[in-house]
Image 1 (cartoon, helix red, strand yellow):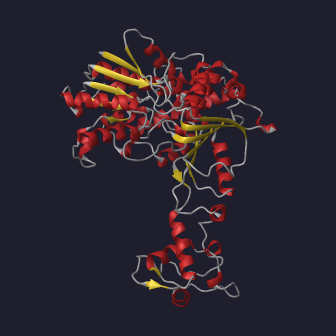
Image 2: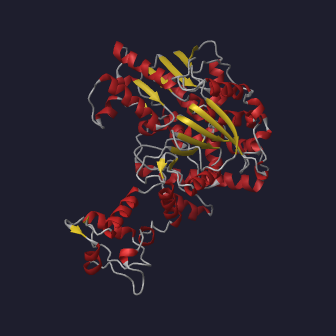
Image 3: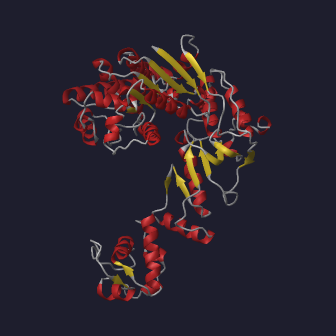
Length: 540
């Protein structure tokens, strides 16, 4: 088995390298598409590579036939799920966890994301105990004392909690065995037992720095038993930010230091300008355990600023912005500030504007101007009407009737009439007539957008995200908020491993910037902690 380790710093094209290698193999006739296993961290990432390969080949496939032609472009979890020939009915769902909770006396919650296939990453539950059980299986899949080891890792000395977790784990295992049920963590366990890998000639593993011990066991089994003659494993240990979910960073580092493996370094970043590269290099060098590597930035200097915290009422007028926060709590605060100032934005890639509601606003305004609207638009208006102010006739416009309707007709014939002595319907503003399902904050946000002069139907230029959720993305302008004062994050820097992990997180955040990086410090007393690697004296 020939094994190639592709070391790819940010923007150097790890995934593109793997894609090109796949295309090279297919073009040369070295294998068929059914003989290639391409496994990435998410289903979406693997399918995007597959679709790029198909597009470049000019082959014609339907949504279903492309899956048959490229059956092993997926996550490792999806592979295990399919090779085990599991049915959706065998997967633990909300009803199963409810029943288990009733029988055991412990509260279990549904952790699985339903869909075609399996979840895309290690699930987290609302239950801290379930999270610890998941983490134990990810980090110590072969160790019977996995629960005890997780407790020692987390430095918890709570024997009552440990006993409760061990009992929960036993109850969960018995419940699944009795009912032939499976959880996310079971896929690999059973897959490794059955030793039923597909026949493959080439293996590709992307984002390898994020694999858990359990996932590495699957990779090893594929290398040994699938018949593969060559493996390409791509990653960057400096971007390994999922240790908390069981990622085995040391495994990837050890492979890169194994002289029996061929190392393929990618040394040109096509994303990062000089100023961002200089900071990123200092961040990477602060990590105590890593693979030494050098790579070149783009020729452009770029812009890097270090700022004290500022209100978000200026500076965002132009360009594509990605605002990155260390915690979900800070994401929430940033979003609230953006709404006050009327900025259109996305949160975790999704627009926060309900465009059906925007259509209802337009339809209501049209009616008040004495014009007609369609039955479809009337249906939207009725759907969002504030029942405390305006009488409405439910279901009048369901089915999208043909015809045009004006306000007078709706008032007289279709149950839309003023309420006793209330203000005339023709004078009722949209934000009083239309209730966004009770979200008054959303109405205030829309009014702020209008006051600021922005258009409601514009595509948002601003996205807000945690650093973890942004991994793999990039944007022209990045605002990085460095605060760590919430929850356990501040204390995480008290150990060498914790400092390494935080350096990696901010390294990932900084290297999303293609042109400008704006580093924002929280300077109020309640936000005392500032990572030393982001202090102004180190950013020159």
